[in-house]
Length: 273
Image (tube, rainbow, N blue to C red):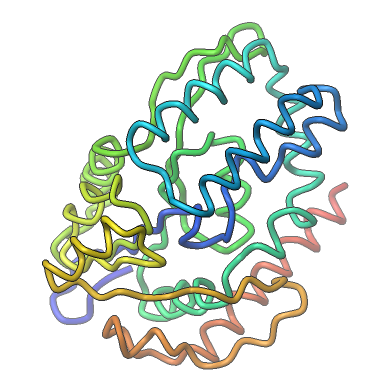
């Protein structure tokens, strides 16, 4: 949790979609939401199309706003506990195969260095928080939906996107004592420029065209993650990204510790059930 050079607290902030996982985390749950009667077939098809557009071009500010409006309107009157239950029950089947191997290696590197790992995502907290726990992140910050009497109203109290991601990071820095000049951030989207600029060590991961140009101009590292593979079947090798971002601390041992912790947490949950 500290930088050994000066004792300051350090965090690595990760965007989620196309940075840690290969798809939109929200849209990935379209099928179980449909199967449980929360959305109809037309909504599934619209979500599939949105995922297709997202995967091809990334999401600019206008697209993100349209996606936010679509998702919040779709969620109006959903039962909050039902959503949480669906996510918990289907999380590993849906998200586990989507996690980039390179991302887990990089996360393990940061953990081995004593850094906190924070997921920062525009998706809803009911989806983001379980994913963050699954991959061993320290904490997460995400979009917060307004609920009344146990149901979503269709309103958003905090939209964790664009400049708001930087606001959230600065708030976390104040709360947990992070020295942002020593912190790291990773994202794929030009919309996350404020998040990347908020730290001393920004890195573009699978960047869209605009972010690639900005990263090249500013001399930021650019990483390519291309190997989504199930956490359950993964045997982690040393991280090739470590040299690129200057962390360089025992990826094999770190990944093993992280994976053991995840598996132990999963077993405890299974026993509790």
